[in-house]
Image (cartoon, rainbow, N blue to C red; front, side, top):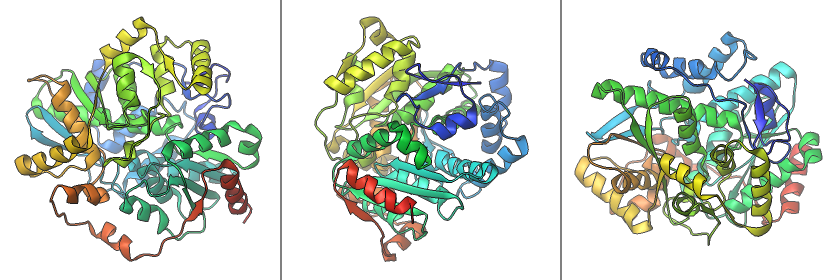
Length: 465
């Protein structure tokens, strides 16, 4: 397996090099040169695997043997040994047509833990084996930052800086990032929104001299390894539902997403042979992706703050990966369209490509009141408390599927992380002890204007300390 850029200007590179490059040096995103297709026989054999065994089985198709099996096994064990459920990502039946894939049993109570605990182990492994200094740099709309920090805090040879938009993450998300005391962690609270933070991250990675001089490494879903780690739970949940129903047939997945990363992992699983029906893209009022699925037009609108802040994103950093595939792996066309997007702020795809998009995806944007109503309804009907992002996914299932279909909706975070929305539903919840303890800890963060030069100045101080 080799890795190439969606913009066609990076020669084929190996797994570890792709991991360390993060954003491709030509400004594109790295993808595998070919997607392995698994037989039904192989998939059925995998049904009996534990989550950790399944990680190893899937990664074996992508790592080229660059990591000794014993080392990879040790990293996987360390990554998921801290999860509160032995299944790592358990599946809960709500009713015959709906199962929830619980992705919030990791240390920061969000789905980002699934990939970022592994990536933290992997960065530590590379730093130790190659004697490298690694500076992880990322942006977060809330959950990525806490998970990434948790994965690498205190680790030798690694520093991590996370940018988050001031006042636009939940209080618990902010506390999870800013109460960490280790000296290898820097939190920058940036005036602006997530898209501003993400834009600056991409600009810094695109500056190849700065990237090389400062040993930058990516933790956001621009890093393909994060996508690959998230692909695992699509397989795992399908196997659990298949065993529960006694059926081997296509299942729909509903995915709350703003950055197109989590749902792209589902697309990858489908391309690898998993029996996936519809991939339902659930979003909120920041619905650029919904419009793309329906109209084939990709154009940011006005930024809106919502009850589901982790999806308050207008520019989806993983969109380019899907664009590459839906346009027939035509890197030249992708490069042209992304340059057009940079200058004009809008792109559209041909009618033939749009038909392909609509054969693979459904989409639904959930407004604020519908999100709260869904939380209230599911608490009343099923005694199951949804967080607002998960509520968007469940609402999309109700709008985009037919009776008799089986659906797995991704439960992306614990509701305690978004108590602001839960209280608006008139519901009082009991916080897990780990979250309650955050409110008694001092915070440590640096406020910066939304200017690249201010961020660079803080990074210079941090890297040279």
